[in-house]
Length: 135
Image (cartoon, rainbow, N blue to C red):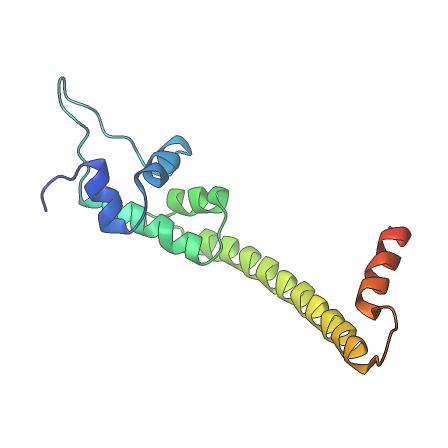
């Protein structure tokens, strides 16, 4: 593989150039040296690392968690990586439970709305007003 400019690297990974720069500022992607009078060139390892970050983001890992995974990426820290992934899974499961709670509450409110006939105040709007006064 030939060396890539930042634009070609970003395009190859399916991200924007500013995303590459952002990941560099966050320490997730190294910034290659610039030879005098030339532009920075990125190699295969940079592209692979960028794909890794993108994949981890797709699974919902935070940038801090991705940084931790990158530190464990030499293949000898499987247990530590699994522990991090287990914590992340527990967080995802907790968010799913909360989303299901919200889903059921909204379904209940929509059913109450559908059951109203005539000129009555909206049960959904009323319940949201009640939540504001209780908070």
